[in-house]
Image: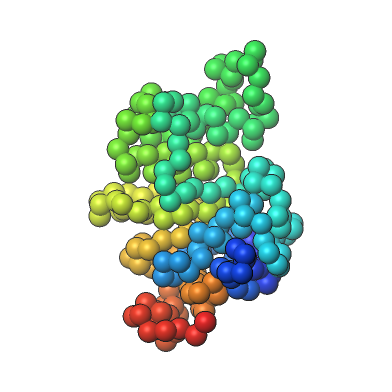
Length: 250
């Protein structure tokens, strides 16, 4: 089976500082894979390398079997990968509907042409309605995105993330700042959209991680110290040391 994402000896340096120090990891198609680790471990940096936001210093990254190392972000996105961010990234002065519709234009073959309206494009309308229904936002479709509650803005960002048809989705702290009830809704949404996608999640809420993930990788000092099922990670001594504050081996 061709991996959804494969890291081979991936490194990232900022000047003399090593942030990612040799990552080898295979993420299988269809799995929910969580990345956990202390603050500063390099989790968001790894996301930025996969999406082309940062250039890899050494090593290779493959998406669905194709080398995407140091490709442009828009090129990687068009090959089937999308992500959300820690800080909500939406168009606040556009409606929920318009946010989602804009996100799927390229995937459905529409280009930005000021003289051509997409308002009455049936395929675009139907697909937008599907994504809004899937993410529970149908009743808020005409609301300006900036007026949504925080949890609904996060749901909208997930809607935007999946609207382009990506089969590999990266979510960066999707439940950050949410109440228990909001977190429960977000977990249900993530589980629903993972049915036909590979999901990679960076998350600090261990309840969310162990509830959702098929496998978990633990990143400490820019290296993966363990990868396994939730049960294997719970029992791993190195992981326990890392989260108890005892020095893990660099």
